[in-house]
Image (cartoon, rainbow, N blue to C red; front, side, top):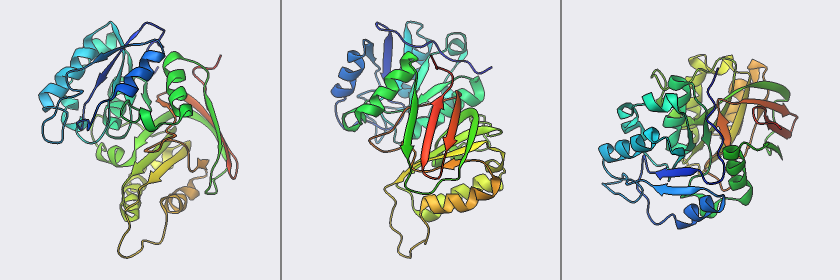
Length: 303
């Protein structure tokens, strides 16, 4: 049984840490929004720290996160931003107290390392969602989806994709995150089990050939064949190649997975976009996909 941390209530404490790249400025707006939800916000020592491109040294960032993993009064931890660096500290963390008193961990992008590790190694849910650094540009709907996820309110998404989907219905445990990070975790203890899961993927700033290469790695390893369904999120800020690759991320993914027979949706609102909707890794979800219309339902917090 996958462990679900207790949902938050007003008055609970949430800690902000920076496990990866340093912040370029203040996150006052992100703090204000969290406080408007009735939460007490604690700032870790890594939040405004800086060492080269990181939010302080590896030891500082690991110690900061460790402090809040162990603090039973802190009910959730949210990463201030992504960037690069979480993989440098993941093996320094001790989850002994966390396993006895699990709490929500929130973030996306580079934080995929931590979210994946929590599910793979410690069988615990976490939330892929906006972070305080991205709050000012986030859509109200994406921020509300994070609030609902933290407080355990009913949550479902309906949208129309631009790229034709592979229709069908699927129900299963949700896994996923940033494509580059998921590929990077392959073969490690932080790698999630893909069998009979619904996988979501997103990435930013990659070239089409690199996306093709990473997707083919997942194909050749047998991971994509084992899925119940696939959610393709935003693949944006694509770097232009001198010689055109000839396929968009959506079309190359479509060609790679169409033979498997499970439903696939495209343009899902997740990733490095303003409308980055919250997704809970480890939760049971349902996908209902037509040629363009998509309905996503979080089954675990239906009320």
